[in-house]
Image (cartoon, rainbow, N blue to C red; front, side):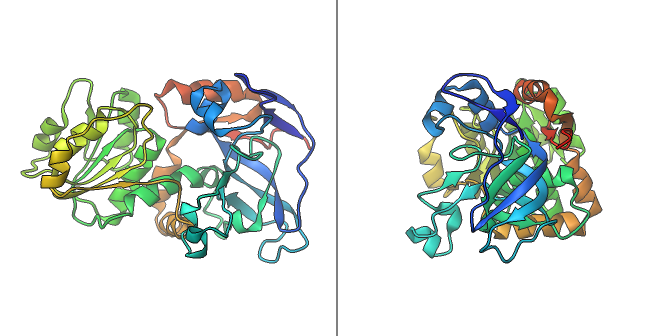
Length: 350
């Protein structure tokens, strides 16, 4: 099979022929149709410090995907050949305290598809049956199915606290931040503001149902509150950027009792005003991945019940390229100006 392959501890990937993965008794083999490029994949391709800390080579990366089941193991009973599926990328141990308590997203022994085990930048990927999510509605297209993983990050973040009638601030208009706008609008937020320094991404936010897109290169969030006619701070903050200035400025513009969810991964330590966190009784919560599988059911429900929601989430994909043009796709994803990049893996004859 064709696969994007990192053969050793160095920068770069190669599109090469690799053996098809074997299907174990509890596993499902999937013919990959579409696969999204994630920030994690950019780290892996570059083999930077973040990649060195999380992967072992050789490796086939890729963890955001949609495909068709072509083989199932002898102990698989809930998934059948021909099912159209996506995959939850976190393979959990099932034995730690969190797993046994039903909090699988908090497994302390998690292995990640495309990070610690071979992933979906290939014609075929094998994952445990327990990680397969079947799409039972034809309105979930291969393009939408490929971004269920990052869409799940947005949904997991947005649904942590009640949002109906609340004023919402999102810092970072990357693909997940953009999808979070659509979720907030769908569930009934009042004012929604998003920040970034990329005018292209802020323009994309306009189609998501945003009330105000703020370029923080020249406008402060305090000014955005005035433009929205807000007399108090934001009720709900979602930090999606990981930038060192985003969280401190968000904290300065939260209402008393405000809730902040942090999905963006900072590359350096961040100094924040802990006195304001205490005296304003703010809640800060870290978010990682998706709840397994409650987030997935929520995603499917939103997308299948609303044509507007489907259109908004699909519009986050700004580049859809054949897998043979993967280098162009990585360049587009790394530029930080567009939306989601998805590779088409059906271009190979096999």
